[in-house]
Length: 492
Image (cartoon, rainbow, N blue to C red; front, side):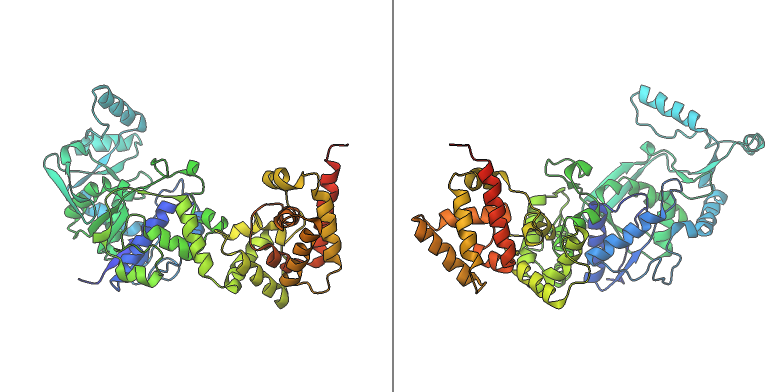
């Protein structure tokens, strides 16, 4: 196989969504599997919508997932510039060639006239397309329109007969009738090219061998193949990835929750877990394994193993996979990644001492079996970092509002206050000793204690949890809960 060159060519017009990242990942994997080049190109020919901030978001999303690029706006390369707005002279050269050869023409139709044409076609039950009003204008007619100041765009003169056959590496053979296409705009009145024209020129100029993109672009490939033929360009091989659907099997959108790449980062997903999860959307590595390293995925990846059917973004499965990665990490590594989340919530100091980081690593080690996301530590495990945590409804109803709970909590606070050795073993002995003294099961002390100290009914080993909290904090929480819920008890 010749040197592989793929490209990720996002438009900086908004946030970097998960579908963009999925496409970039597959392009990157294909290039890395074959030892090829992965090119980043910014397609900013939509002057009205692109923003510099959106370019920054693209960089952030790719880097978060661990995708690097061999050529691009920030690293340069042999086919620079890699930003389309800086390549306008190149596009004008090729537009002029098509005009000279009669393969493109000026169109002077106004937006109002174009809309009238579309409405007429709809009224006849036909798909809206440009019918070629300016296709056969004489030079005299063109001159007259220019004289009155009519702006002109440039349209590509598509074949009016025949078919365009797309041999897609994932979707198979797809055939389109040329008569249904109409003549697309390839040069705007502003002098900028349209997406269709710029992408064809750039893929040729940058020697792209494989175009891997979302299935929603499959219809555009007809125009691209025809333009390549008209310009005398070789066509890259195309592979169109299936759509990603929400769990209700509709197209993934904002209503399904986090869609922006960095939304998932903020929710506490690990980039290596998301890398693994996204790779399995629409691709099968063979076998039954689901937890695969980056190196294993690169080694196994092929387009032949990609599905033509849509994939479902199952958030529950994504969280499960993230949890598996968390379990495999050391407490120190989780603590390093967790720290910014805690600091952002005001739950940890800005420049922690080494002993505090060592303590955080112990917390992470204790919690990692039950923490699917990094943000779990700032929500469900908030009690490790602050006394300001809620008592959930189950903890209130099942334990904290029982008539004998305040007395049990006060008795436990007294015992723990006298404890000289603040270790899990010593704490357990005092808890079980109190249960024996009260003539109840150990659970009748353990569960109210957990509810008071953590605000919830579930969690890691209570005794190891308490060991990681300051002794005075545990005693304070026990007495606070005893006082609060004693006041809520009905009077005799």
